[in-house]
Amino acid sequence: MSLALDLSGRRVLITGAGQGVGRGLTLDFAASGAEVMVNDLHTDRAESVVSEVHTAGGRALPVPFDVTDYASVTDALSAAGSPDILINNAGNAGAEGFGSRSAFADTEPASWEPFLKVNLYGVMYCTRAVLPAMIANKWGRVITIVSDAGRTGDAGGAAYAASKAGAAGLTRSIALEAGRHGVTANNIALGTMRTPLTEPLWAQADSPQAKAILQNYAIRRPGSPGDVSHLAIVLASDHGSWITGQTIPVNGGYSFAL
Ligand SMILES: NC(=O)c1ccc[n+]([C@@H]2O[C@H](COP(=O)([O-])OP(=O)(O)OC[C@H]3O[C@@H](n4cnc5c(N)ncnc54)[C@H](O)[C@@H]3O)[C@@H](O)[C@H]2O)c1
Image 1 (cartoon, helix red, strand yellow):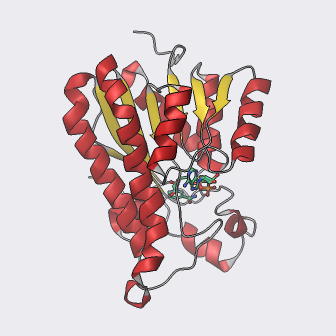
Image 2 (image 1 turned 90 degrees about the vertical axis):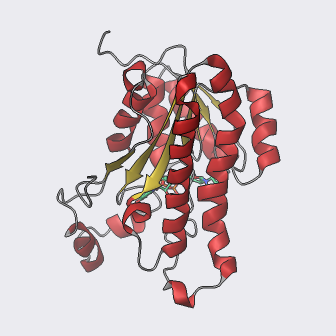
Image 3 (image 1 turned 90 degrees about the horizontal axis):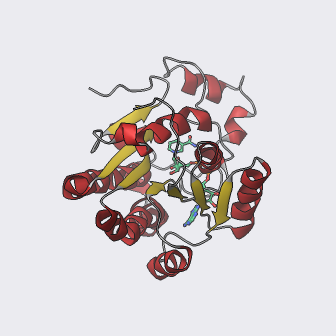
């Protein structure tokens, strides 16, 4: 088998692909030959990323929908067709940009819902919608973008951490159920990235807050979308066919997997 990671002939659905990590995944998967179904809640963002792919000579189509609305997910996929690869990337960290942080004892149930809806139910809805076709095809890949917060816990972000840990547990269960049908399912657990979500922090890289965060990283820089996409491409390729049920940290050494 050649080492070239050619995804020609594969279709990948990337949720929340209108900016940040999802945009980076889209550009790199398209450059590897895949046709990318570019999802986002914001249609203009999805269309803008599709235009970038077309300008670079790749194949992509906008598939906007809200991952928290199961009927919208299934309607959009009925119209656009099934992917071979699903990347559950759409995420909610509390708000567009930085969400507020509170000790769990000071939070109310209503404040947990945005995290659980996008980060857990959104992953369940999209995975449920695409899995039967993958099983029928005897080939499929599910990659869920989670967070170190779900592995280590997050003081001030308990609901976010719980939602990400839940999504990772779902993905492991899919690995167990669907492995015999040629479908793998893995999580990529990110540390702090430089994306529009966190740009206010990194725009002042010399700030005490930025320096304090980087003190906890063996490699003292935030991650970039490219740090994620190349691992995702390996997992999505035929080279990844015996890697399943894993949560692989891509985190600059913030925490280590045992
Ligand atoms: N940025 C970080 O430091 C960091 C760290 C750990 C994990 N992550 C995870 O990585 C993923 C991507 O993060 P990012 O920094 O690129 O985020 P981002 O906020 O920059 O981009 C997320 C995209 O998802 C879209 N989205 C949000 N809710 C949606 C919904 N209901 N349906 C469809 N699309 C929706 C948004 O419109 C946005 O374009 C998320 O799952 C996030 O939790 C990020």
